Amino acid sequence: MISKLAYVDPSAKIAENVKIHPFAFIDKDVEIDEGCEIMPYASIIRGTRMGKNNKVFQGAVVGADPQDFRWKGGFTYCYIGNNNIIREQVIINRGVNHEGGTRIGDHNFIMAESHIGHDSVIAGHTVLGNGVKIAGEVQVGECCILSNAVILNEGIHVGEWVFVKGGTRISNNVPPYIIMAHNPAVYYGVNAVLMGRKDHFSGSEIESAAKAYRHIFQTQTSLYNALKRIETDVEPGRIRDGILDFIRANNLRIAGIPYYDED
Image (cartoon, rainbow, N blue to C red):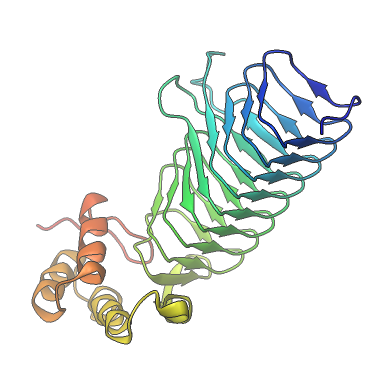
């Protein structure tokens, strides 16, 4: 299953039933689990740990050196989960430090010419459109869609079930269950269509999200006061608690509204 025209370093650990096409490059100290397919001219760079049933298309570079001045050439890692599609010309940088590393979860679809920076974490079941640019140390939750040419600035967190419309630049944290659009980025409603598919969330849970975000984005009060109102006005549960926990964990800094402290 490994072409004689591919380069596979002798130290690489390749499981059974892995297909490596001509002119692919597999670096030293790479591990690729069973069922993966590496297409021509794709490169898997040292420190990459790849799970099962991933497909890496032409010209992609997985585990590339970090694009960060803090990296001094040490040995670092890039972890790829299971059942991911990594399309043409995608670049995924590995981590800056020996601990941690860049982590891609399971069942992600990463479209052509996207870039994922060092030490970023893409949880799983997420779609990155063509040309999405994710800077270093970004976290993206489960079941998100980032449309074509979305940009996520360094260090931000994106909650689960978020939909970011094409061309939007995100420079602050995005709480779960919402749609963001335009530049500068603004709240565009609750991600109700996707949340309602296959009974992932009930109608009352989606309404709870909408009610919570009305307090945050549509009442012209401070975020600190909006969170207090949510606690009294929205039924406790995974939606309300997820929103409150995310915003507080990120120091009341979210995209689409200015930051004010509680004073």
